[in-house]
Image 1 (cartoon, rainbow, N blue to C red):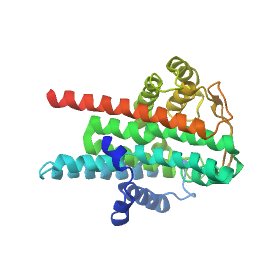
Image 2: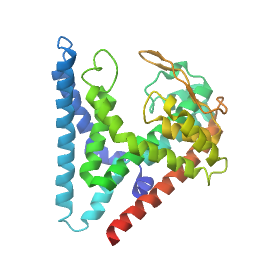
Image 3: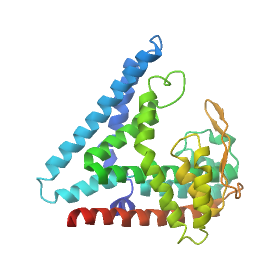
Image 4: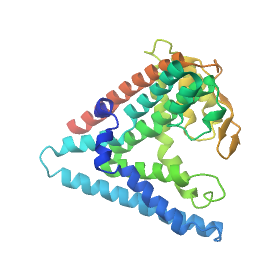
Length: 312
């Protein structure tokens, strides 16, 4: 995790070698084109989607096992494994992307904020005002703290490289086919449910880390963070994303969520938190500080677990 904070997402590396997530995405995309035919029954497509996900995740776990096996027999193998883990975490990259949204709003106004936000969300940014852009950036920061950083680190600590790569494959499958659209509702059902299961514990851990971070953040209110997380986490459409989002909303006294416009239409959503909804670059900066503190607490926790395992 410390390496991820230091090097972020090394673009030069991915110019030379495709990112493992790209490989997983290409494979599940191929399965989607070949197996997901609309003239088949829903049950048939669900089974085919399950097979596609099982193969993709199984190959990812197998690749992780093979990489660990080989690296364990090489000089400085643990260092190379740490580098692999660092580039598969999305902590620094997300932090930087959200910072660009704040810079865009300050430098170029609404259009600058929308353009920066477009790179990190799937919703229609054209309908957002400047407050909506700021809220969306903070929501993405909170939600992706769970599935971009805490969850992969959690599965690596628990199951090593096989667990990390399997999780990234599950998350990629969900992001590509785990939708409730006519085409993917059946085919992507297993991907969506598996992603929910894989993120169940990490999302709640992420919410707790945000609450703890509020103890040390300048604007943080840990008691309100806990209250809001308990009261509003279940209001989110996702069974998991609401936990870190509600914790961040409570910690900073914000209101997040609400109706969202996607390319396919408007999705009604409840408001999370009871604070201000008219947010701006200063609120993004406060959320980024809270995020950094939560990351530091997570690093300390992961280091403690690793040290306990090494001593034991």
